[in-house]
Length: 292
Image (tube, rainbow, N blue to C red; front, side, top):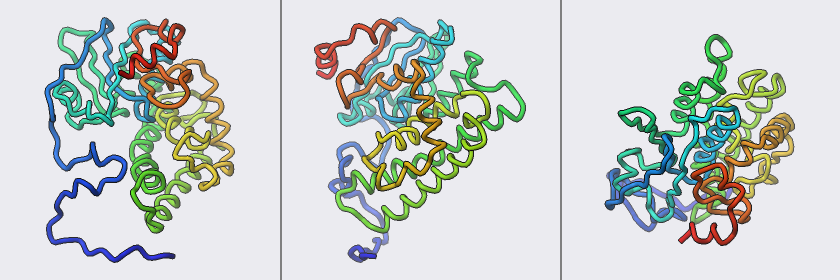
């Protein structure tokens, strides 16, 4: 193994603004807003402020699934937060999510609005609110929540660990890539073994556990993440691929994946979503206007 240049940590760490790779312009060691900016509010009770990353897709997929399941109260406005431009540090966004990460949700269906942040918390909140995609009790509920929280604890190794060092770091570090590639393959094996036993993660039924895991690990085996499919031999995880194909075939998943997207083919982008008809009326011209 090639050894990286020797590095001795200083006694006290200091922030080197230039040492952040692709995301140096938005990463910082302090919290709080950097500028004043009020968030827009649409006409629906649920106001989502997000971006179509894997974490953002979790929530829009669930919202589209709820609407497809007949829950009219799940109608929502999805506002685009351009994290590359620092929208997440606006004062309005920080009020909804003090952690300055997407997605963030405001539920205005009651006299006192409720803020919910962190994607897993939003999934759980909405599933409980509408009584859907979450078993009500017993072993099935425990299994669903276990896999939901498995995703919350595991995905940082895939995204911030493997994805960062493999695709985004300013230099390739063999040790870091090897370390996180090993962990991601272990995680895929965990999923593959589970999905060899049951059609979905919590058992026979599709739940928020599947919705949480799909954008990250389904996206990985389907070739959407970091261009690393061949490197990680994702074709070996046949049960994960079967599960990912089944989820992608769901119309609500196809809709939810494109909400707040800023990359990919124009047909796969709906920068903002305010009503169901937006999926039918979007055009490349409207997509361009939304990007301005």
